[in-house]
Length: 544
Figure 1 (cartoon, rainbow, N blue to C red):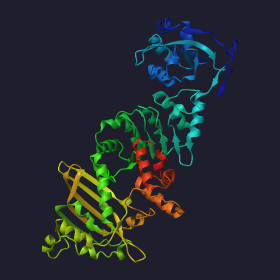
Figure 2 (cartoon, rainbow, N blue to C red):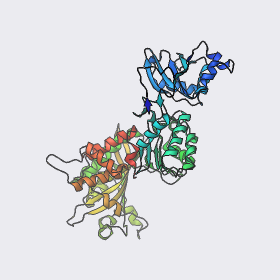
Figure 3 (cartoon, one colour):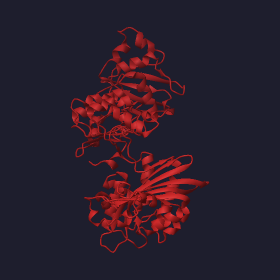
């Protein structure tokens, strides 16, 4: 609440006498007689004091105010009604006697990182509190109520000090521990317990103020701490008592202390054992590296893996598999195994005979001599074998690709699903895993030296999500052509597939597809690029 006439001075009958503290008399104010007039006015609680930053116009508002507040820490100071006055800037504050005394000890001069000192002047008892009515606490409560979602119990305190209802009235950055504590106490007294708390983009370096939530707060489901200044994993210890299960930590200095994702997640889980999701990724069992959909090392070989997989499966699904001849080394080895999975939706129509005939599964062979015969050696033996296998159509959006590159070879593992063209009403859905060992025969030129192929009937889950994108192809584009419209059912299936691939919820998956004009490849590319720079909001992964 504000009530002030900016064109007039406070009423004379209500205004106390003013005393100006400058660089010249600042030390006297601090170390002079305890009965001096300055000390009397400093400690009055019914007055506004005016702080003037000499030549403050050359400084950014947030920079200069944080500089002053850091200088008086841990004493509380709430700058109110910051504005420019010619080449200077100023603000008001009340009940700040301890802060003024601390500033006076340095003669109202504060050094900046650039070496350019900032000088202040303070007018004590500039105005009576009845002349300028500003209720900071009430304003903070109002903003928190606006940012609290009652249905989801989500409190959004991101960029708190830049809220339109606060920024021109009071400067209250949560990076200041005293203000952070004050804001959390206001929340604790005026809002019901929250399930999700967003503290991102506040430059917070200490979470100790969250201890104030322990007494009445139910377990927190989610905390967003992205884009803050948390330096050490041990600083997260305060969250243990709140039993946080989901945490976002991107863009904090502590992330730079780790050289691998495994060491990072292990360290965070060591402090927060209740954690289930970190930085938008579901964590696996403790002490086990997180499973990645695709693993490519080194990262620059991503293009090589993509080109190989795209080229190989395009030819394999084509009309003539003999075209794969140039991809196999003259001394290449090939073996195939096959397994039947019972109790799946595909079990009744598995029909894996064509694969079991060529299967080298040593646990199933009664005649071990067949193990040598079924190990195909050389391209001349391999090509006729794979040509005898049923025709296939692979679903590229089911692929999981792993690549490891050594000095002399590359290993590429591809898993996914494919179907066989059939006159039956329901196509035969297969699950496969193929591991290729490539040897280099020239600059960026490789051939397959060894391949193992395993085929089984797809699981129920694999069959449910397979081939749900209209007109799938191994090529990069999956989008309606000219004059072709997607049905509501098609769009629903595409949304489910994208949600499955990205772990985004259905709402945000659909939004991503709509912005990509229902081109799944573009949608996946857009998601990847935005995720790398932390532009995907937390609510995109929320299931609440």
